[in-house]
Image (tube, rainbow, N blue to C red; front, side):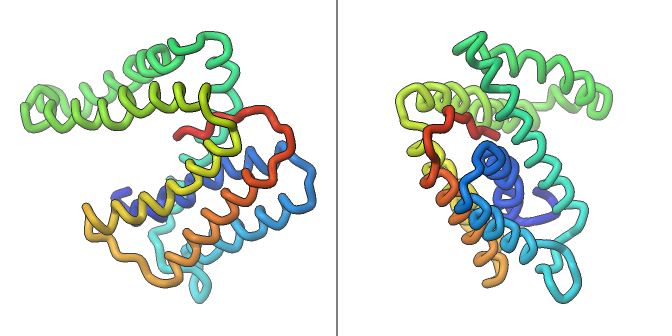
Length: 202
C-alpha cells in the first residue's frame, strides 16, 4: 500500500479469491469472467505502453497477497469447519507468535510508545478483532452467492476510501481496470451452480 493506490492493491489481491471461484467450476461462462479479470490486470500491469506505470514491486506484493488470500480460502474453510468460532482467535494467536518477535527485533522499545500503541490498537480492532468475527457470523446467515457479490465490491470501496482518506486519485484507465475486476468477481459469483460455500476473506 506504500507503493500503489489502495483501490488497485485490493483489486489485484481479489484475483486470488476470483481464481479459486473460477477454478472450482467448468462452466464456459467462467472463462469469460477470467478473461475479463485478466484484461483488468493487464491494464494495471507495470508494462510500458500497456499498463499504468505502477511500481512493479507494489504489483508483485499485491499478487503475492492475492495468492495468500487464495490459500486462506482453500485451507481456512477446513479449519473453520473443525474449530468453528474459535478459528479467528486461534489464527490471531498464531499470527502474534510469528509476527511479534519480528516487531520487537526491528522496533524494540519504540513499540511501547503511546504514539505507536494507540494506532496499533485501533488497527488491531478494525482490521481483525471486529471484522473477522462479524464475517464469520455473516457467512452462517447469508447465501454464499449474496456474500460473494457483496464482497466483490471491496476494490471499489477501497478506491473510494483511498480517495477520501489518502487523497489517492486514479486515472481513467486504472478506474476501468478496477471496474473490470469487480464485474468479473460479481459475474463469477452470480453464475455459481450449487458450489460449496466459500469464505473469501483477506
